[in-house]
Length: 194
Image (cartoon, rainbow, N blue to C red; front, side):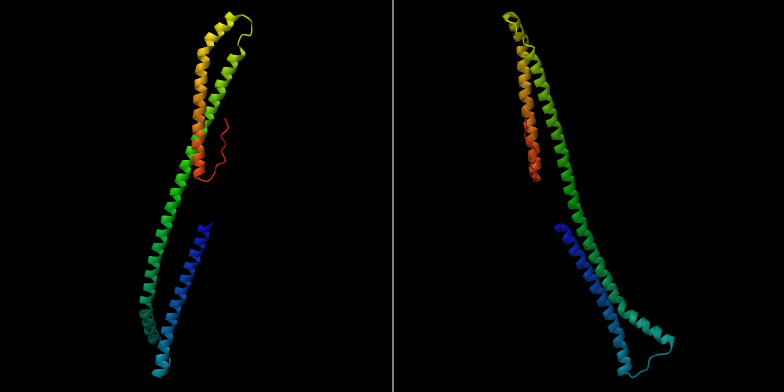
């Protein structure tokens, strides 16, 4: 918002300066013509010319006086325009840099979110397998079938437990990285549910 207000202020300042130059050049031109008429009418006591050739010479005289002034004004505003364009180009470059950084952060955040979701899916899959194994535990009183079931699934459950821990750790790491990215931009609304 402040940048917009500053931009409006700069535009108003530039418009004011341009209008001041226009008024100044008009005043200088009018003053030169008025001074010319005063010199010849009051000091030289000459009447206004009736010959078109004399008015042409007068036009050449006024043009000869105003041309360097107008050329100076044009050069001045050309240099001001180059300065303004350079500043705007620099500001645009900065904004593009910020936009690129923000888009890179969004891509990182999306990737981390996908990885966290994949880790959560892995956790769910492992839990489902473990639940199936535990539900199918023989509840018979036959210790031999229980021992056989335990032996065949003991290694599987241990591996699944390790995979579950690994998936939890990965998910936590991804969530922490997402929190760090969001905190960098002032947003900490992501939860850390497991």
